[in-house]
Image 1 (tube, helix red, strand yellow):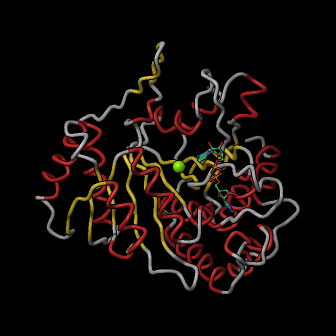
Image 2 (cartoon, helix red, strand yellow):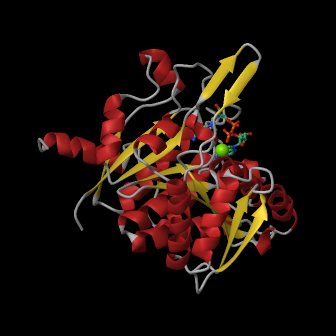
Image 3 (tube, rainbow, N blue to C red):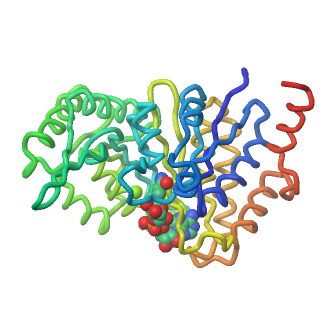
Length: 351
Ligand code: NAI
Ligand code: MG
């Protein structure tokens, strides 16, 4: 297989704490991936006046995939959220957020939320006047068609059975109405996937009460953001919530959680969301055998109770990772990780 190029943006807070061990594990499973690192986030902004450098955006735009940790938001007008910049600049229009319960004792949740990723309220287009602020919300025909088509294609490829379109078309009749009409038109052409629609507020209640009723949800940007955190709450929290942002030419993989300043630096972050992102990235890049191995190791680590303290386990991040590495048969994390060794060799060989 030809060499794949992955740009890693560890970010800050728990971002690097979970992404770097994920990169190490992937480096040991697959030698045909070249990793390149770039900085972004609040601390980078404080140093440089930019939240993400132009070079990082350019590197990401030519990479096969991007692995993103998490950054800390900053309420300053000139601060452009790095993840929103990447999603918008690279036209990563589809955000896929699986929520699967691995922990024993939880309800049998296995759902996937597919969220429109480029518009809605996330264009950060706000206008202040003397009396308050107006926020513009864009819902375009093109973006609705793209996300609905993507969702059905993803459902077919992954053998899913049901799709619920989530909206608020009873109030937002024109915008959410457009999204629902486009969904219904596409739904009438589906043979294998059962379809229905539900209001966003009813969905929140049904998800809390009977999450096993849902298989796939396709929805607009803000609804998907909120519902996917709700779904994460059903499977043990943000530490188990991966996400993937797909565009036509490349994809970005990021745990759905943020930089978690409340636990950053303590070495106790749950690395599972990040490892699940690694698994999704391996699948995307065509390393399906290694993706399966990683998934099996994640499931076994959880089933053998090597869990982090956010889910009442006894392991810190390093102990979760050691358990997973020994299941994979790649032994203890080295002082000099595989990714560092490979970078040194490359420099020595003058590449
Ligand atoms: P958060 O996801 O960082 O944390 C929410 C809660 O979940 C916290 O109690 C945290 O300790 C816990 N948590 C999250 N991930 C965890 C993990 N892997 N293991 C164990 N516990 C975990 O969300 P919050 O607190 O709302 O935001 C913190 C910062 O991160 C903010 O500046 C926010 O804007 C930013 N953020 C960045 C994102 C990104 O870079 N893509 C996404 C979401 C938030
Ligand atoms: Mg969110």
